[in-house]
Image (cartoon, rainbow, N blue to C red; front, side, top):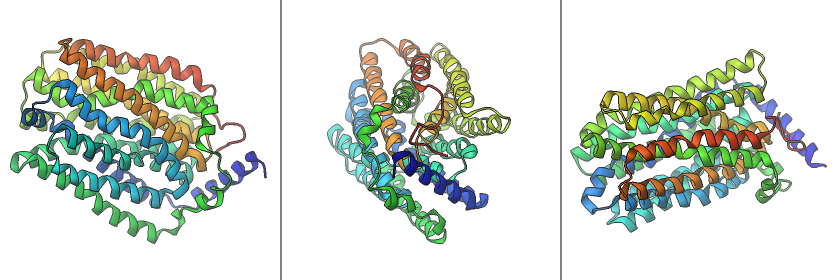
Length: 428
């Protein structure tokens, strides 16, 4: 059987499965995947919230703090491609369960850290498990969700990143003030095990979400390296390589920025630092809904994705103004607007793997794209820490990070071509 015939059979089966699943069940699945990405980001964001506390206790410089974040990011970069491939082999249920158990255990063990090296090692272990989260919901969307509704489903699931950041900031601050930062790592890590139990109960009650395609297509699937020959895979890679550092800058450095530039302590950071991520959370749903409505109005996938990406790339740099504002209110407002606009890019790009490739290959392609995300973000995180230690200040950093968005737009659009199924590897 030819590769195109295999892809067509897989696509037809995925479409049949999606059509047979009630909307109410898909909503529950979406809620579970939202919970998964939320927990992912609580465990990821905790170090950023604790940055002033940890730096004061261990005496870390900005560059050393960036090393800690990059221990996570560099590991995440290599683990992402493997995780995507593993998700295609194991399926969503098994793969995501193993990933959640892995990173939750690592989160709890981080409480044992004695300094930069040990905490960096635990964060690296955490990254191996967390790499499975985003390929999992992308694969779930391409396998079980009707094509027209995928941007909304992905937007809902992707909102877990901002929801996790919203919850992490006051939660971690409150636990640390009441007890210690070590207890904060234990409590946030244990949340993942509760989710695993709920997820397993749901999956057992809904056999329609069985990992069918993995066993059937695994012997025929193309090796992941072969996808590097497709410019569509490189398009998604570079769309994330240049744009995702913007998100990680706000994720990793907002607490530090508010502490050093606006004089806020941990309690005050817990009060306001979650606000921009609330806007990001709303934007995930808004951008997904806008994509759904545009396609329902007759817009092609190609026109919809590119229009929302250009909108995002042009407006996200408004965050530059936050560095020059002396008002805390305006600082938070401008960062919030920037993140709100950035999410339109994120949701659109997250759908591209499923727009271009067959459901059985989405995890692999998504993993390759995630490697681009973490490679660019790790370089940017190191650059931010180094620049601050050299006394450059936050204003040039905000400018440099924000201007990555127009670069992402130019490079991404030049590689994307028309957004449609790749010949011989069609989706639906």
